[in-house]
Figure (cartoon, rainbow, N blue to C red):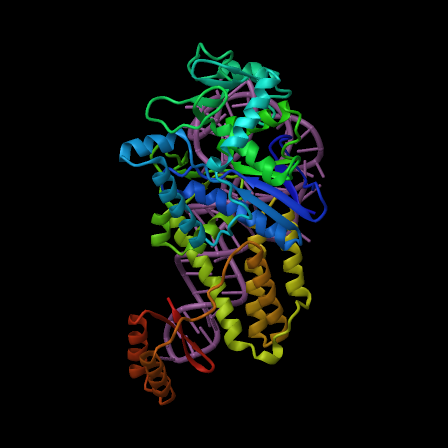
Length: 459
RNA sequence: GGCGGCGUGGCCGAGUGGUUCAGGCAGGGGCCUGCAAAGCCUCGUACGGCGGUUCGAUUCCGCCCGCCGCCUCCA
């Protein structure tokens, strides 16, 4: 059974589902006002891995992740570029999906957009107002957090210490510096939506409550996001739900962030790398493997060095797949995993994943299974080696790691060069054979000899 | 001020009260190979510092040092 760290309790606990066999999860998505960066990539990969693993466990996963398409940042950007907010949001949302697809991140089951839910938000704010949990000031509506039972649950701080540590300037309009905006009255030049209190736009914290409850219903299983969303975003989402007496997330899962030389990568520090930039220089799988090889709650350094390291490790995976497919005849290729070796690694893999998503441990099992497979191949134990291959594929699929098994289209010229080289080798004309190998390499092929002659794959 | 995290061998990065061992990358040696590549075998003998608990601590406790984060928008 899967155990996960829960931010609300601060402990690792068994995932208890609302309904047997079904997992409902909501993961806070991006505000589309710029190119996605490595931090976005990390949370998206982390929760894609969780989602895939839960699916692998036989659960039916309903995965909701939103797009925030109205926000102060979008308005600023639109002003700066002389464009409309819609233009900015549409453009960057497209860039978002391009990067997600390149990283093989599965599309969510539902992708709600904040702008499609403004009415629902107005409705919810009205309810908060009616029960006197919200109040109006000159610039908008605010939630009075003192009305919220257990405010500070996720921050692990009580209201008093949150208040004393507040770095925000005391806004004389607000009853407490911790109170947050539900509805912001429009200033000139800003996009507006109508509400009973006046034209304006919703605050950020309201959209996710409305959309998660609408699409997943009360008491959904997992609410996820990066650790910087814990406070105030998730705290405030929860606040709105509980003050209305509605059950919210059963389990809070948060991933650590990407760091640059030890410091958090963020837009404000301007030390970020965009996903399109990473994808233009590296195998997209390298980022996924990097994420897999550290624990999801730990910080990770994503640098050309660590990515290159992961690419080398991927080479080991790909080489194993190539070797298996080349050397194992159809007659040895069973359809189910049998034998102790493969089963044991698979079992260890699951145990690791169940233990708060110990992907480093799980990945170690995958690589050990590869080693075992090679040894079995050396011993011509093809059935067992094939089982290792099946297990490797199963583990890799469970976390979304693809294999490069196809050598790529081999053109006529390459075929001829390969034939000529094999001919030269059989005649022990090694000078010629080496020259032909160099030619293949210069055509972009990696060359490996095998019992049945020259083999190439794209390097 | 309040709350939290981290410090592991050349690098990345897990984990655990004790004879064996994460895993990956890089490096040394060996095997295989015409030579390579891929692969196999093998080597390096790590856990910030000081105390304490213990038969025994990298792992538990305390203190210290260093680094990072949250309490404001941020993935």
